[in-house]
Image 1 (cartoon, one colour):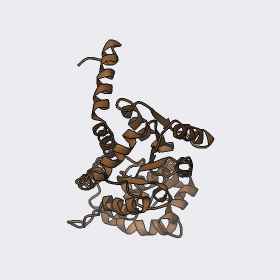
Image 2 (cartoon, one colour; image 1 turned 30 degrees about the vertical axis):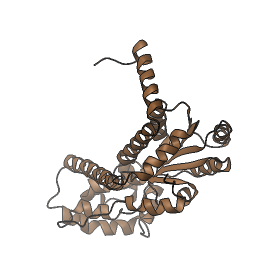
Image 3 (cartoon, helix red, strand yellow; image 1 turned 90 degrees about the vertical axis):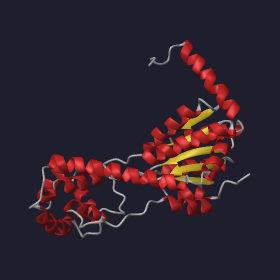
Image 4 (cartoon, one colour; image 1 turned 180 degrees about the horizontal axis):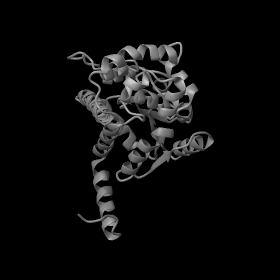
Length: 309
């Protein structure tokens, strides 16, 4: 029986999931040159609004004052300053100076802003396709996902932790997992309430927790993972991270990249990875899965839960 890798082993395996960047096939466009300034930076949603405004309105934005840019991007002036310094510039004037030559090169071929918006949305989808391709390559060897699914299937009760932005993924997993697992509990808030739920799960016989940690990664999530381990529970983590304290605390790590081209992250790859873990859980207990799914369908039909096709 394959063993679930430790946090250190999982980091080494998860590193293979991080997508590489392909070299450009042609001269980058002005918008691509601007986006290159943000590459590798973890921007807050407010900072992404500034970045998106610069990309969509480059020929105008590169010559605005900090007051005008803040107003048009819908953020505060200090936010613009923090955005510039996060990119390594002394302040907004230095960033503006770097943007102006790019803007001047774009003047002759500038299109309307609606076209730029469509192209940027398409670029975000292209980035997600790349993320899914990366996940596909990793799942060519499904051993770790299958083993995590088996461990989660055998943990009764099974606790799912998802705080802040990760709540939606945790609730999706829990909603589906309840169809095939007899006792699924969800933690969507931190603090002592989370600890109580984790402790009760362990005392009830649970052995594993599935935790989600999507950016921005919350200190509360790290505290919940540590609390789970302090009760004797083992932790499987689904995240975009390949290193750091969350990864180090987990017993098994499944990594999937998030889409970061829009104001808020998109989760195509983590969503598919979640569905893959659910599939692994179903396959680990086929008789239980069949019985529970058939039972649910009978109840759904009896009480008319769904609109017939």
